[in-house]
Length: 338
Image (cartoon, rainbow, N blue to C red; front, top):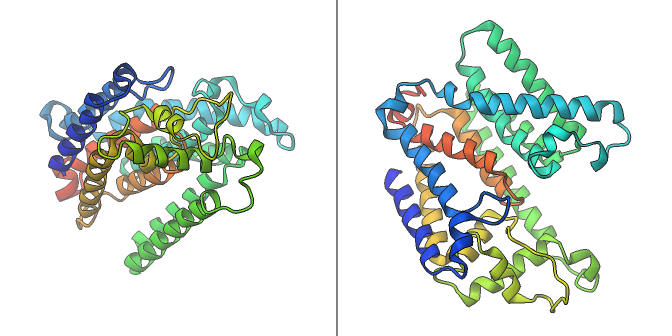
């Protein structure tokens, strides 16, 4: 798996070499933290957790402490502000603390991923008081997600329950397969609703900022530079080059693909997307290990599905790459001690 990550890192760097805007590829779009330097920093953390003895001697729980604190702040403030306004929820009631993430959806996306990293810590701690505190935090997190009517996040929490009980029973393989089929059906349904639509092309005021237009424009843009793409963090160039379904005089700026694979394809081309798929396949092979950590699998899969339909915040990426680092640790793969 280490070799797959090295290949992926080298391939996405090639997209910077052939980038349309090298400065943006290196440092990212304003306030996005999506430049390749940030990505390399997170991948570096991943390798450090996996292979440097200095980091390996620490408990995995230590690396999730900042995530736990931030999850607590966001969840408590969402509940504090939204609970009294239960029947009139709108953007004006969104809490100030949580809004520093940039948008309510980013906060809920962060909570949806951090929920599982907290469960990872919860299952490994032996202190009753800490378990109680984490249990209260998880309850607040679920309440905060429900108050924001984030049904996709609630779906993932339900998926976690299904997988968890499947793990504890003799029907683990059957339930896991059924859950994967369910997730795949949701993915296909989302694409069918957003891409294979009909009768909406004339409702231009509706689709101008829709996922359909963002995705299809990105794919058309990729077809113009298929091998290396437009450059890391340069999705706006791929989007602007398409002018689909017809030119807009005062168009809005699209610097994110709202879809992980389409973004990787448009920004890094077949080279980067192929390397990303290779890394994904190697990760899935690692999941077949008998003593592999269940919670890290859930974090990995939930992040991938969420990133496929939305913009992910830098904090979600931090959780993801920390988890990948834990997955790569030999003791986690062989002995499930991470």
